[in-house]
Amino acid sequence: MLIFAFLAFFLLPSPTVAAPVGVCYGHLANNLPPPTDVINLLQSNGISNVRIFNPDPSTLQSFSGSGIKLMIGVPNEILPYLATGNPTLSLQWLQSNIFSHIPPNQIRYIAVGNEILLQEPYYTPYVVPAMLNLYQALQTLNLADFIKLSSPQAASVLSVSYPPSSGTFDPYIKSAMLPLLQFLHDSKSPFMVNIYPYLSYTRNSMYISLDYTLFRSQNAVPDGASMYSNLFDASIDAFVYAMEKEGFVDIPVVVTETGWPTSGGVAASIENAVAYNGNVARRAASGVGTPKRPGGEGVEVYLFDLFDENGKGGEEYEKHFGIFGVDGFKLYDISFN
Image (cartoon, rainbow, N blue to C red; front, side, top):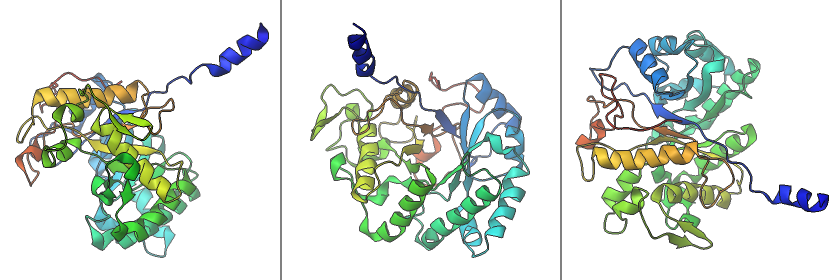
């Protein structure tokens, strides 16, 4: 009887682990509430993980002592300075621009640049050298095991993304991607990617259904032994397969931006934003993995955006990703835990 009980214990499925659900806090607007009001809004809605895109001193100081964990962005234009051969400069930069404004125990990640590979080729040679210098600085401060470094990339770094098992990095950036993956592997840091199924749908609506994009499809799409019922999972697994093709099988994926606009474009509506963001958040919080990595742990995500940003250029929909109005009220119902 004891043998059967022992076997039954080990045959039980692994318990699921909720992944953090954070939100991006963009500042490209002229009507945003003061930081103290933003902190109250975040705390009252149970939002404990936030991505900010640059180390603005007043923003960091407002978060200090709040208990909210941050992903802090290093602007692209700073990378050449941090990539110099003198790691002391990176140590000084961290202390002056980040640690003098907020305690290290509130920092979860430092995001070194944003969407550089393919998008910002001038800065490409500086990404990994800057990360190595910052990593050495964190080691000096005994923080390298607690604050992880990575560099968020656009989904376009894949030259092939469908089906997911065919996921392949663009050969044009492979010489830069491989050192980045090696650093992430060696430092046990995640691969960061900004994924927008909204864009995939609007650009390929002849081939991708809205229901598949919004987690409402009744028909799963096969890819070998895996079955995909939504584009979000397929997009993440395309990166997992691409990393495996380069010999890296253990690097986790963190989705550093994803969201759905409420107006300003095709299929941009509150109803669709509720469906997409709500499902993404629920999947993370419930510990649902992906078909390629079902495991027992969800995919960590940062929803874009806390507020609409009326200062954004480009298409009109880019200004309407906000989950909250500037008055602090939710534009639609969503849970972050």
